[in-house]
Structure formats: C-alpha cells, structure tokens
Image 1: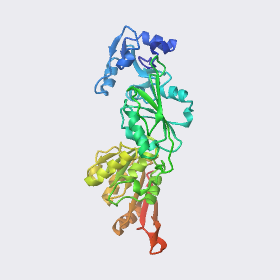
Image 2: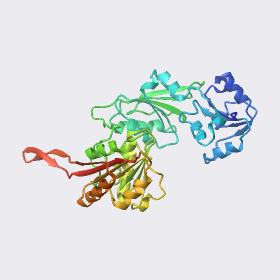
Image 3: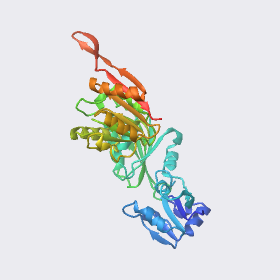
Image 4: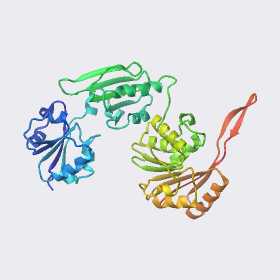
Amino acid sequence: MTAWLHIVGIGEEGIEGLTPVTRAVVEAAEIIVGGSRHQSLINVNAERISWPSPFDALIEILKSKSGKRVVVLATGDPLWYSVGARIGREIDPSEISYHPQVGAFQLAAARMGWSMADLETLTVHGRPVEQMIAFIQPNQRLLILTTGAETPKQIAGFLTERGFGASKLTVFASMGGKDEARFDGNAKTWQHDVPAFNTLAVECIAAKDAAMLPRVPGLSDELFQGDGTMTKQEIRATSVAKLMPMRGALLWDVGCGSGSVAVEWMRAARYARAIGIEPRADRRTYAANNALALGVPKLKLIDGFVPNALNNLEPPDAIFIGGGLSIETFEACWMALRPLGRLVVNAVTLESEQILLKLYSKYKGDLVRIQVSRADGIGKVTGWRPSMPVTQWSLVKR
C-alpha cells in the first residue's frame, strides 16, 4: 500500500530546513494538519486543520481523510515524544511515511557539547512535571521537553529541595531559528523568565547532604509517608526484585497501603505502570503523596476490597499481594496474570502463612522466610533488635 499520510518533522527554519524530498511532499499536500506555530512556517496552498480538542479526535479526523495527500506537522523527530507514535498505534504503518528532522534533544545536546549516549531524555510536556524527580541523581545529565514557561522554575525547586541546588540549568528556546535564545543559571538561584516553548538541560550536582534516591529497589522507609504498616526496606527490595520490573509492564499492588512497593516498581523501569488497590482512604492518600514525592505521579489508586475490586482491570504483568490474602484473592489474581507474569505474596501472620502453605503445595514456586535485625541501643550497649519474620512466596506463571 502506498502511504497517503506523511508525518513531517519541522524546525524553526520552516520549509527551508526540509530535505528536497520532504519539501516536495509538503508542497504537494492537499491537507496540512498541525498547530498554529507549525502552520505559520509553511506557505502552501492546502486545506488547513488545527489540532482538535480533545486531541484523541485527531485519529478519526485523519482516518476520514484516507486516500488524500495528508501531511501532519510535528517538531523535530515525529517518533520521539511526539505525535507520530500516537498516530502509528492507530493507523496501519504501511499507510504512513515518516520524515524526521533534527529534534530538540539533538540540538540541545550539540549546544551543550553532551553525548546523547551519556544522558537521559524525558518529557514533561503535557505530563506531570513531578515525574522527572525519579531521574535526579548525582552527576546525571538530563534533557527535558518542558510543558511551559514555569516548568524550569518548578524543576529548579525539585532539585533544590533534594540537595541539588548547585545543579546547572540551561534553557533553550526557538533553536535553529532567528529568535533562538539561551538562559543559564543554577537551580537554587533560578529566576529567568523564559519562553513557553523550551527545552531544559540539567547537569545534576549533589551537595554532601543531598537525597540519594537510586532506581534499584530498597529506598529508606523514612522517605515514605505512612502509618507504619508498610513493606519495610529490605523486604521491599527482595519483593520488587522478584516482581522483575520491566519497561511498560503493569503491576497490581493488592492491599497497597502506603504504596511503597508500587512506587519502587515504577521507579525501577522506564514507563512501568502500577495499580494500587486499597480500601482505606487514609492509606490511599499516603500512597498518592509518596508517588508524587518520589517521581511516579501516574500511580493509579483504586478504592475497594479484593477480590471484587480486581474485576475489569487491565491484565497485569506482575502482582504483589501485601494485604487481603485469601484463596479467592489468589485465584482471581492468578487467573488475571499474563503468561510469564510474576506473583509475590508476603505473609506475617500465622493465618496468612497457613494459606501460603496450601497454595505452595499446589502451585510450587519459591517459599522463603526472611527476618531482618537492626542494631539498636540496649542501655549503654548495642544489640540486635529483630523484626517480625516474613514468609515470602514467589512464582512465575508458565
């Protein structure tokens, strides 16, 4: 099938910056779709369509134009945090031709003299700004597509609050155009007024007392709000490791409490998702606050009791049962779990342990008992203070 839909990346230089082949495609278009900024860069006699509201209506609009010569204008590379990927999920790729341009990330990296292989690229454009928090680490370099003029100041605040106030910030606007501008500063003293459409470069510099938040599981318990009934640090680390976080994978956190397992799961892999099921409103509030503070604001929380609350949820790639364990809950979870899905259950009480023993005898898997002891003062000396033992059952659905 010959492509009728062309998705064209364009820069500030407009049509003059396109290759001869891509320029010919644009000039031959019957319909051009895009935002007003991009539309103003193209002087072509064609029907013009602006981005619809809601944006999801775009797909039906494009499908209705099938067979005509349609050009969609995007910034830079249409498949890198851009509209091209969204369209490609809904329209047969054989009907689409992509025409990438040098994008904001490449331009900003070149101006900073940074290797693209040695930095993290992310977008907060139209997304919660807090999701960049998970990337704040010593000596990390970040390139961020922002969501508006206030975004650099917000990010500067996140950095400063976590002991990274000395981090270097550079904002680029209108890169490649006659109005290109650059603003330099550091997080702690950032005061620049910048254009709404910009790209932010961050070089993270940690103070001696900076918060250390690795992506591997096992964050300090002190980083989480809660009422004390959470999966503790060492147990959480082993639990998340056995859940095996993967890019884009979905976790059900059953009885999520303060959300510590779900939060660690989402931090551990790019685009990992999680649904927390928790009947208590106060604990859902803790979970939402923890997700926001630790850079995974997309944690979804559901009010309900298992197993009924599991009905109609998207099938998961992994399930953690930290509360509400019963034979019925396990069977509902096991049935919903995708092939090669991972399931982990932690039990503290004798009643829950008895249920695990029954399930283990039927389904096998790995059954271990974990106990952590911490050094603590006993009068003038120091001794080991043991925590309650945890029985942990894990298995993979084959």
